[in-house]
Length: 156
Image (cartoon, rainbow, N blue to C red; front, side, top):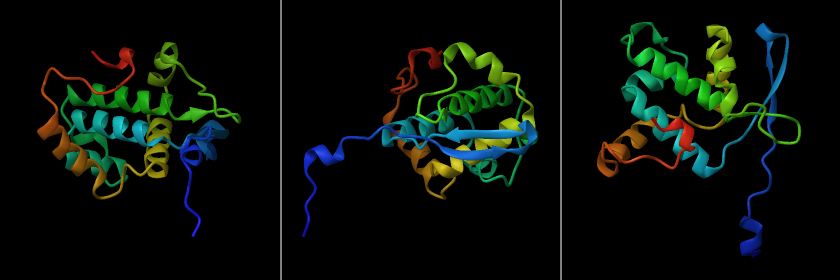
């Protein structure tokens, strides 16, 4: 039996996997999230919309057309932040910074939806238990005034 040593658990640099965005005429690299990044993104999304709505949106079964006017802009901004934290170059460096949020906000809605769906699919958010479990945990462990371990610029 080959038991792993502590240094084998150190995270290697995560390099993205290519994905073709036909509407943009090229490829992007989608970063595979660390466990902490995944947990933070799931919790961030769970705060935005009802878990059934989010699950259906992430799985491509539903669009944002049925959501209220206050939720939609927050959802799209959250989607932009997740896209921003997930697109990297060939060496694994993020392509966008917090200063680039407006660039992503101006993306064609179809491109944003395609990228978001692919990013969440590759990172396991659309699995049946991810969002409901995060929402349940959020309700039991987070107070209204608490914040997640998110980049400071994301917390309002």
